[in-house]
Image (tube, rainbow, N blue to C red):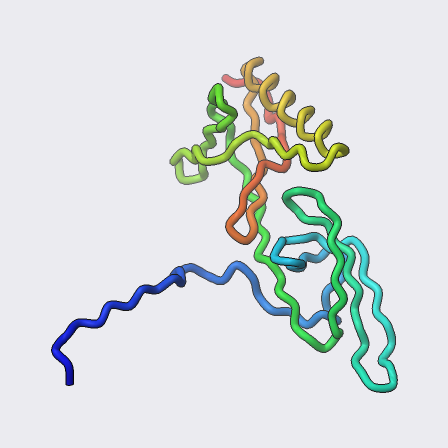
Length: 170
């Protein structure tokens, strides 16, 4: 036996998995799926019949939940697909900094300061929506309204996805 100490580097995290397996044939429209490493919402599913020498296949058309890009995948219906754990959480808006970061109040009274206003400009059709959403958030905040933002999170990413006005500040 050797007297030297062995050091092991672990690259795994202790948290829960970011995805879970689900049989492709059971995934339906409006469900979620991971395609090319991106969390997506399924907008269309079609299933082909079993061929002479193979499995029935599921053709998924889905939209990336963070950047809006359309992705497609074809998977045998009996095989497992990764499905992301998607969470939506509401936070009260406290402040917006000059560089676009928002300060949010969590349920337990702490602040969350690591999110920016949406700035994704990769899809031209989405730009108008994001700009309008940013202007609504900034405008409502400057008017002194109590605003609640919904944050969607999946696979280690987070993004503001909705805004609610809960009335004037008291």
